[in-house]
Length: 509
Image (cartoon, rainbow, N blue to C red; front, side, top):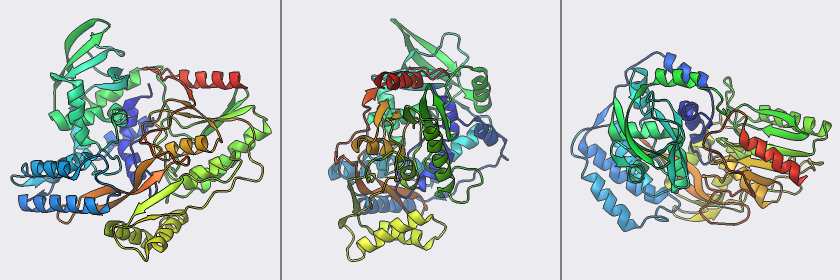
């Protein structure tokens, strides 16, 4: 496994970065940065006082949420009918009976937004309350899971129960079977399908359970090992206990964000890291100069050492912007390319406002501003509700591209632009895809924008575009590898998936 507790720690950091991604898909990520977790614990504690809002204010914002989401969303009714939305709106509106805190409002409104099963229509959960609770010694669920073939297994165990172990099947929590429980938890997270939601659960189950059950000293779980089904009471753990038990575990794989390259058995191996600038001293996350130098150095190294093939590892990659990934792909592309066959955009007042604000903020990178200007030119003679196509220019490969076989390694936690890269190189025939199918989609409703509700000031994310993968395939699906490599429930630090990938490449050479 790749240390899901580490992944949880950088969730908020990465989400803040990815949420600002203009053309991106802004999904959660996976990374291994324990120092961030420790830093979180050492921050000065402060009590987060929450403003409250009257029932009338909440109802007015709820009506505004529905009306503006319908107006701005590329296709609000693609998965749910208007009648189904109306029914849910009436049901949830009845739950507004008095003064509510912002956290309560966020949870209520997110349930409505998540109903559409589109990952890029969402409201941020009040996760700051959860972090405050943990900093003050609050306890959380001590198990991290992995869903395989429809079954839920313990992937990481931080409980102290002697009979609970990694690999056991999890059947129920607090007397609720996992299937109906997980369906209930869907209201906390916008997701296009169960596969991508299950990927989120692997990172965020303790958070969702805190929203669902509130603070718990113990959890009742039903487990299965082979044919033996039994119940167990497991103690919730503080964040510090979680970190201590994590430190005591040895031998688990940790896939972090570090950009690196090396040669393994004559094969070039590249981990490009996120497709944005995550340096601690970065003034602009979209400044790709450092990334450009890194990619140039890596490919120079591979050419000088005459490697037999190249393996690009984008497992657990949060994605980012194609202004970064294009710099990598153009090194081995043998013809001009772009990341989409169609970029269809719905015009709305909300999108226009967001685009105008971006144009007025010159701190954005030139690439983002350039696209914003293209948008403005494209919609200048249109009216809200119109659909237009944005014609993105082809990217030219370098003069003498890398000409050895290229392979790209993916998994369920390859997100956003990482999925775009995988679809791109697969569709253009630039590389062979290996590993595990992505949960994030290759053709998607994305390019998320935001609008703000009048009374609460809550930001609502919506997809303004339908982005079609280069092949033109409009199916609601992830990237399926050309060579499937099963990811084991527990991944040791010997990295069995990488070992198998190298073995497969050498056989094909």
